Amino acid sequence: MKRPRLILADDHTLIVDALKNLLQPEFEVVGTFADGRALLESAPKLKPDLVVLDISMPNMSGLNAGARLKELMPSVKLIYLTMNADPDMAGEAFRLGASAYLLKNSAATELVRAIRDALRGGFYVTPLMTEGMVGSYVQKFKQRKSTSNLTLRQKEVLQLLAEGRSMKEAAFILNVSPRTIAFHKYTMMDHLHLRSSAALIEYAMKQSLVSV
Image 1 (tube, rainbow, N blue to C red):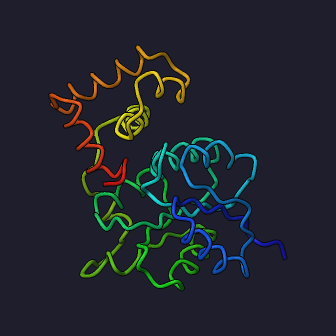
Image 2 (spheres, rainbow, N blue to C red; image 1 turned 90 degrees about the vertical axis):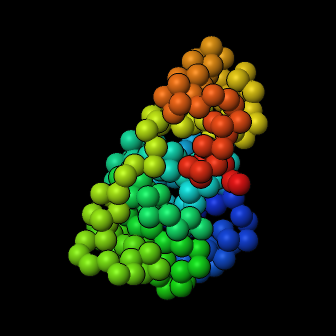
């Protein structure tokens, strides 16, 4: 029987290695990536059935990469494995197409169960985040307020600037002009009512677009 094809994306090598050892007996791990942009560029060629990814990754966050992947590969399943226990962040993940949301201190057996559920078309949320909830966990997370009022492109620009890239470097990475980057930056500041680049970077950290 053909094993489901998985991709693992996390910028911590030890975690990727541990996940690979855990999952390979049942699933075929066809690729591992340490940043969201590399994942986005390579995943379509690897044709995974499912991607296990972190939210906070360099160059492009897991949320942005996942949203872009769902545009390119609508059938791919996304499982977020993260340290971020913010219910609003979980809601954002499900709104962007996630099938499961787990914390890195979840039991290893939870990840295997979440993968099996996702591949069957279901959803999974770690019990560490659903204590006291009744009914549909996923719907309850989706109904929470959005963590961001920015477009996907704006969030991509924001992450690169918050990571210390110049406007010229960000423009090269995103294949646009520096003027376009500047337009996005000042549009975001105006939209979010922020008066400085430092405030914009602080906002990016709160949104888990960069590691604190």
